[in-house]
Length: 101
Image 1 (cartoon, one colour):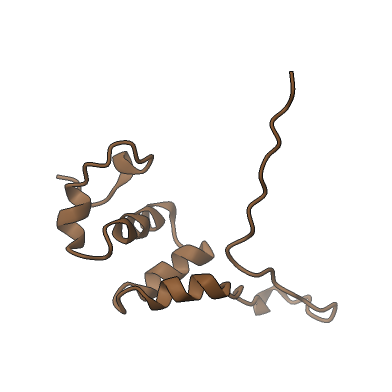
Image 2 (cartoon, rainbow, N blue to C red):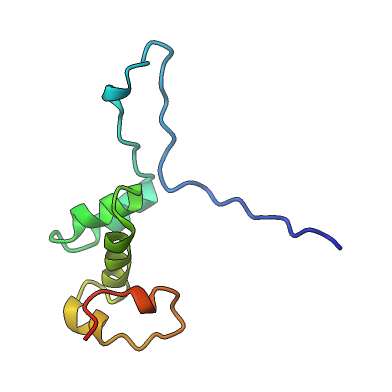
């Protein structure tokens, strides 16, 4: 039996570079988004940009991150109606989507 080799995907955010002088945990910096992800955030509606950026950084709870992904999937248009009436049952998040009946 051969083991499958896992594919390592590039991170969504750039790693933090800390100097040896920075040891204080209260001065944590937020990682920068990569350039291609910044364009995704800029191309979303202004209303959803802060949530979308936090989701890409991994700073949202799982429930809120799922909600942002569902909103992105429907193109941020008529969110409650489109996400609540989603017919994409093969999606792994379908059972967890917001705005259900």
